[in-house]
Image (cartoon, rainbow, N blue to C red; front, top):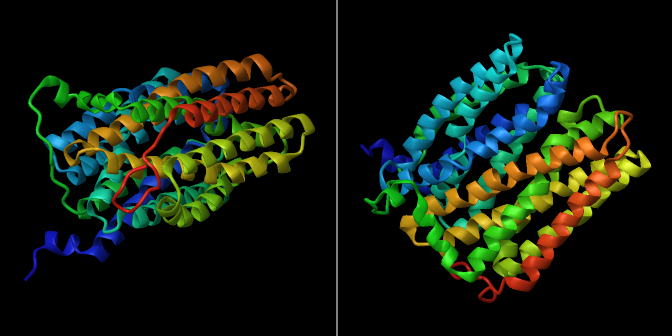
Length: 411
């Protein structure tokens, strides 16, 4: 009789279990992240929004590299991912319970920080497992990653139309339960053992990943990714608020429209990576993002919700073309023993440093430009669009690349 590990590592079961875990991984933030601003405002914590959104990226400066180093050198990535999900689910439940019980807001902030420390390495670990175990990773990774998009959409619709929790901590409880289930299912993921070696304290902290910065293109890539992640913070922080201002009472569900185009983009991005240079695809993503933020700016000026919804629709395509391409590109450009740390570094800049700065800048812009009667949104979104335009220019001028991409090559 075949043992369970052999069965799990066959192609079909590998794809199936990865898809299920990605689905649950996407559901977890889908329940509460888009609703969080409105939940806090309903609890009289509108002034805490910027601070609360600083917490996850701040924690993402600490744990992704350590998690990647553990997966590269010490612990099987599948086991590490499963246990961090289980512990994180308890912290997330406690955070929203504290909010629900009207405890001092700092309880929510601290407990959300504990959850974030355990959850920050998750996307990098999942990406490493998927690209390590999937056959034809460039083509199949976007398909398995599609599970997370559908999970996010499902959670948004459940929050708005089943749980009626657009302004309720119930969204957080549902997220915590999903996270716990994700951790349990994760024990069925294929065994992904450490492939690297490292005994120094730098290696154990994941700092070997910074050796990637010796390469010019890597420096440009990580710089632009960090800068691009700054204005993207506004999508989760303030796009739902503008929907409310423009008359939408089910903003959490409306935000899931972005995932519709994200699905389309994920079905296309694998073949696009085989036909076009990475530089070309990333520039498309940046250029479309300028347009996307411009549409929200026009919505703020015209008071037309359709323009803002149009920008949300475009967001899914922009996000996929940039970050899915980035994950696959990075996986193929590093040594196998450094993959976890490389994905951890990507998480650090795209989920940590960039959003941390973004939460502070976007919070300041919101308070400086947007008035109590709902004016000022045009200036808010226009400034963010200009930031992305700067990213486009930097990447177009300074990134060189290695030519057209192939299944095993680089670009």
